[in-house]
Amino acid sequence: MAAATKTFATYGYEGTSTEALVKSMGIGRQSMYDTFGDKRALYLEALQHYCFESVGQIAVTLQATGSPLTAIEAALLGFAARIQDDSMCLGVGSICEFGRRDREVTAIGKSSAASMQNIFAATIQRGKDLGEIPPEIDPKDAARFINATFIGLKVMARGGATHDDLRATAQMALRCLG
Image 1 (tube, rainbow, N blue to C red):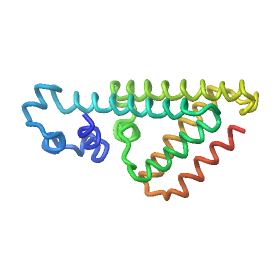
Image 2: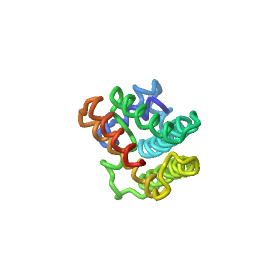
Image 3: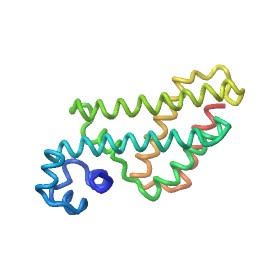
Image 4: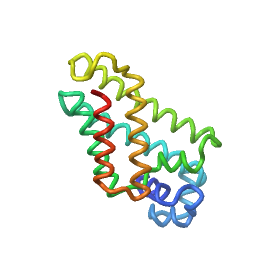
């Protein structure tokens, strides 16, 4: 699944041929069809897998430290450092390629965004409870903002932004939390 995900992230759905998929996955064409049905079904599974893994990585980072603000900083700055090396993102790619034209792709994206926002909101609320984040900050609004920052960092990286640009953007988002 990782190979298919990387191939779709690199070339998009339309730009990925069945031949490229079977080559990257190291399987035969018939095996792909027997296992996944068709290219679209494989794409949806790869997108679901990518989103699940991405949310999981962020959740681990946010829970790895006692300080919620430090955890959010680690998530943003760590993410900014990682995407500089691997700027292809299947999640952002799916939004750019499909928009809201495909209900299944949209549903996966919305579910992933909701999960991310819930994780961020809980972390922000912990920060408020500990006095690290000002009481006037609404956790849900701030979570949407941080999630939008993550998406923006991905798009910036894909467009060739430098590590310093990504880091500065991440740090600006942190300043908005107080």
